[in-house]
Length: 166
Ligand code: FE
Ligand code: FE
Ligand code: MG
Image (cartoon, rainbow, N blue to C red; front, side, top):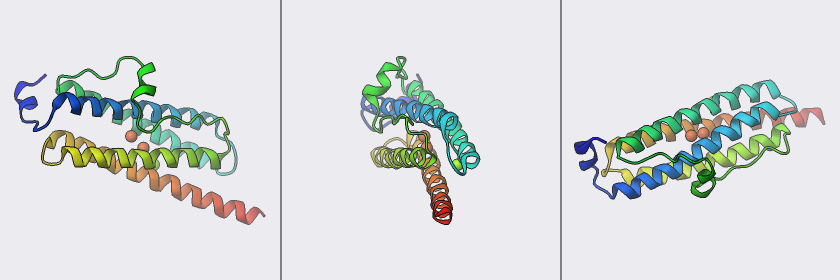
């Protein structure tokens, strides 16, 4: 833990670490939802969707890494027990038990929309209080906004394709 780095945080650091650990749990669950989704997804446009899901899985894992490093910088410990992910998560986990491409896209769009709301709240909380965390959260939020748009664009293409097939 960096002493001065922790001192310049103008808020309850333990509370902040707790919030970052909740986001950290979200990222692992999002990572797995994308990763397993890319394996099981079925239906039209499968190849394009698999490429997108695989790329997003890598992004979510990178987000988990960014959050873990910041938690450690703040003197905290990233969640060490995967069982805790379910207790801490803001956005939950949706198993792609219906692997049809439309269902998988819907589940992941919902997840991204929750992630966007979560990081927007974290931005508001850290604004002018902790510029370092703010900057990390902003970078993650930019990715989540991109993820939502990517998936909604895939969904539009799919709807067009399904309409043509009728
Ligand atoms: Fe993420
Ligand atoms: Fe995302
Ligand atoms: Mg993408």
